Length: 186
Picture (tube, rainbow, N blue to C red):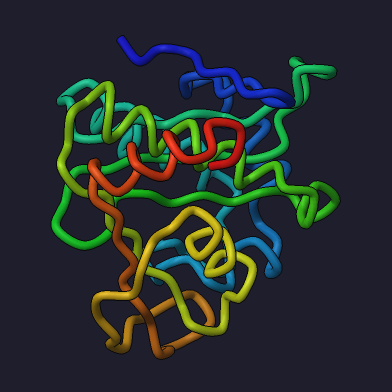
């Protein structure tokens, strides 16, 4: 069972099949998908969210290979504004998206800090790695602010095409030291 998370402004609610309707309404927008890996079909099919939830994300969670949450404002818990996942793997352990009206407000930084804690502290993994397109400056800024560093540069295939990409990482010890220095900033 995946636990619910909370931050100052957010609720991270574990993914359920019923969330497919909300995801389908929010997700298929170029500003959301352009920097996601090209395994996301584009144009996004009318049953894309149902297929993702039912056939990919929920089975991963049941096998203990991934953890997925919808992102909601604490002030409006019935309204989904984004999504965040943690996935076992060598190079890309976290992925997320946020509906455009909510971007640029620090909300994803809060969600990422909570999932960093979950990955490194609750699950006990020694290292968190995230890959992202260099052109995705907002996502890169979150990694910078959270003390991650670039450990590899390569090209990857995104919905928008083949792009230069960076792999960012932080160790559990580095994350703990960062939190100890400033527990209110992650």
